[in-house]
Length: 485
Image (cartoon, rainbow, N blue to C red; front, side):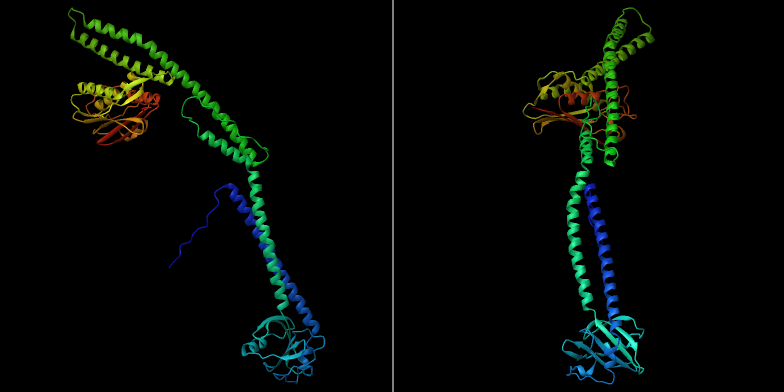
């Protein structure tokens, strides 16, 4: 069964990555130094051991020639132990067979019982006068030099590797402790050092977080103070400087945009206000001409009717633009208790009269729902939602108006089972002058300028509420929430 490879967790922050990278680099360096020191010490001690073997020669092995050591004998008469270190091994090979093997002890010479595997290993040592490492079952590891004897035999002389191995192991232990302590100290100190070095970058990140929390979509924007700049020659200082310059450009652009929006709002308000009088005058003259008692040609009568209708529609558009301009300017609305239940009831009654071809249903709570706000503007919100459902759905569509309370808020739902709002305009359905290329009502003629739903959103936001849309073919719901507090 194949075990899936689990990747080690990677540090997420730059501070952690720098600290881990510093510790890893130091660990690699310590490991390289430790391995090099161990190999160097081991080679040095082996060379010293080979030098001792060379100086000792094969006198001990020669002294074993023509003598057989019994298993229970340890006397000096069986070999020359002069100038031989304790643990020196001597062996003699005749015809490729080990005939004698003994080791020098502190109290004399001791016979070495060699196994068949030990004899095979000793036989395989080349007689080249150089040291070779051999592990014997009876004596552990030895450094052995093999040379040719005077009688055509092969003489072996060896020294134990235990002191060398002990020194190497001690170096490994000391290196591990020292390097481990160095890595621990470096990790702790390095973490504090990296944290201190990245403080300017943390301040830049904090400033960027505050900027990201600002509402930059519209209105006047006051950017937070700039990030403190550090040494411009450092990378962190360069990032802080570039970030502050970017904030300066953004602030200039937002200031210019706000000034442009204010000029546009002022123009829309002034133009709407100035257009109200001529539009009303045109409409009045058209209606007056229609009341003329004398005979009027049919085409003139039709033209006057169209002038009156279009001037009426233009007057409504001017009023809507003026209302939006005032809301954008932050003009205060009336603040008085409004019975939202009666307001919805009146609006649905008007909608039934305007759209008899639709099926209108009303679901109101038993207790009246009261909010604080502008009665006229709230009535306009409900009327615009009902007019939107009436104008953009075919005859026979069922429109259900529901009023309820949820968590200290009045919630109004306007639902219809019409064809739905096209998906491409749903994101901007509450923006001004938004109109679908293919209207939801197939036989619709005429209509507004696309300001109705934008007025709904603006008035609702002015009352501290919100409006949402959920639409798909066969189900469209506008939801308005206004606090009852």
